[in-house]
Length: 281
Image (cartoon, rainbow, N blue to C red):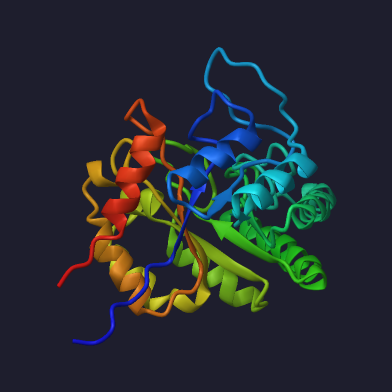
């Protein structure tokens, strides 16, 4: 037998766990559960549990201090919302400048916390535009955004989402088109974010799609399907998928963007970590 392959870096989306606490405290709790990387959603808003009020705009200094204290890195953050709010919808030509300004703003914040990757969305389908026009607008915007990212040594990852449960109306709901767009733009500062949760609902064929296109995948997201809860509760056998991804040579992070069904979030994260680190013979 050969040497066992090491698993990818598992990072945790800090918007979906411990969401009654300030962001800085969530980082510490995630570290205590055994993780050394986290990711954020918007830099200028924060997700809290219903009924909990807190500061919405994130404090870059406090985040950096918490990461240093707990030896945690920031994997990525979100540039613009799925619908195009905030930040602009790149499928609309008239929102190009607003979108590019948002890219610059988010990159500046990201680099202030030691983060060099941002998740970008397409915006929703525009019924006054043809699919060809939306695609052209999107490629124009992403091409310009990738040039900005290149100047800063930053990576943008384009996300495809499911339109059946969570994001009705979203433009990019298939990985095939996402890979086509990334290859058309042909800039190493733009890749695809392959979200296993979303793509299992839209297309399945996970292992083959991921491994065949691994060179164009910059980040991976995961959650249990259906329900978006713990990864060990759904229909996807994640340990086998993680092994295939590792064997394909993937060097990026594997982001856990799930909403715990287990009330004790620390226990949920520890159990998830143990589950993902299973090794098939």
